[in-house]
Length: 133
Image (tube, one colour):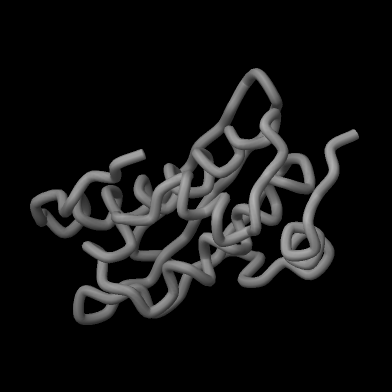
């Protein structure tokens, strides 16, 4: 069983921003068939800023912790700033993840980025900065 740090356990036991936004501006879904983790991110955007973010995650403790921390990292940021959140930054923010759970940090960043792309497509805007891993 992987050993998780204190911050990972805190976000797993007390996840922030869980749920679904009614009439979201953007939705991002990701899944990893290998491990079975599924994430959906819902965003509200006002004046190019993320004013609300919620998530629903079906997966392991690391996947839930990642979803929770990504919402905190992105809240209040501009869309461009949120697109710079990478799997590496997510893992660092959590104080590290076991090697076999690092893929979860990819899922969180990808779900956020997919929600932003979905919003931009729906509003006819050009994509903002792509993530660098």
